[in-house]
Length: 267
Length: 308
Image (cartoon, rainbow over all chains, first blue to last red; front, side, top):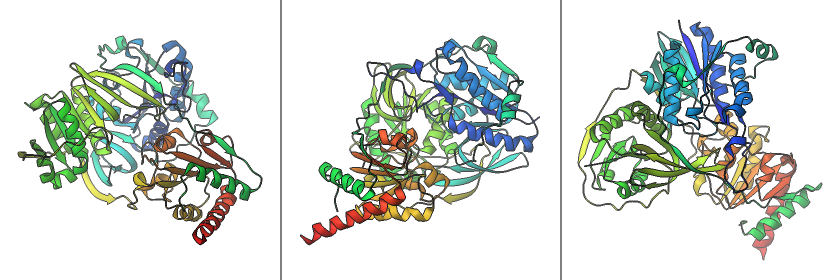
């Protein structure tokens, strides 16, 4: 069996940053959404499922609470993975691992993969999540599973003889690599053009199994390392002067006048 | 005994990281990629240097892992690059230790470190405390560069890489422009309908003595600009006096890359585009009409000022 596991995160939505009156970040009221680059991983799984012929499992670990208030957002994220490609979804939602901790999250994911017998030939994940952008969960999961890891994959060229040929986008150059399978890959947005699931796919998704798990189900005991001292919303104090003129010449003159006053125009 | 491992990818990243390491402990250095090629520059800091003649994350991960087991350090410090993030994520996973990339401030305490980094596409800053041992990947300008002095001892390390084989190495298409240092930057987004139309942006930039950069779709997906012209959280972070965003919608991933700009001008035909609210001057206009007109106005102005 050659199964694919796709890691899918319910991320805080950076486009909807809620703020408390004292300027701190109101995490509880900031909504969750699927982390954008996970969509590229799901899209690639559609193609690779044909190649490998096994099942596709999505794994999601809830890292932001409050648990009760996150049910709807979480459901939408899992539903998208199921509608798009996954045959079954595994979701870990447990108060004891909220707020998330990178080491804990990776251990939980690795534990789901091992204990649920997902037996993947390939684990696919987005390069980073849109909320924390730490680029580390895929590498940690690979270390936990003892598998090779290749990050920043911008193209999967082919699968041959138990190896996958990929292009990796490093800091100063791009490498073409042959990676022995099974392996963990993190992917970038350049990989493909994700298509949203169709209505029929969304309807079919409701019939697919979703396995809700807690740490007790996994027999896992974890220790968090990070304590969050403070989260502060960055205040953007831009002037927000609107220049709206029917006559573009007038608009251009106005802008030039403003920029001269600011002292940022050097001709 | 050494208790801080400093990873250096390029000699230019070493000074600050070593400076920071010295405030927190006693460093040894792992030099890979360019720093391995120019190892004498690193030896000049007087600390022991382990040279890894490779730029590959798999190899770096193995090297640091061996040293981690030998020294049991309280801290691993490195630059916030793709190669280092990739390698250190594996080391962090192997030992279940915390890793913080993209760190802008860090301070050592008796029982751990307190650090600050961007969160939510840098619309939020998060301050975190973690116990030792931990991995900190720092952004530039995090500390005063260490003064040089002494000659360090050189040791060589080499490893295989879990069966991952390099078939080919391709250079990225780079222009060599330095957006980070530019005083004026013209940014282009998907409001442009064709690559040819970017000529307007280049003309405007030339007139203002600036450079042209672009959003992720323009630079990384469409490849209308070289990759080093990509502005955003995963691309370049710029801090010009004037940033003019043309046909840019204002996604958080892009805006976090321009947050350091003194003045932001947005030109967008959609008054509801998020960038309008995040700019100092928002021009609501069709860029195809407005930019040529702006260029004309600026040229007239320049003509007038030069003749007086």
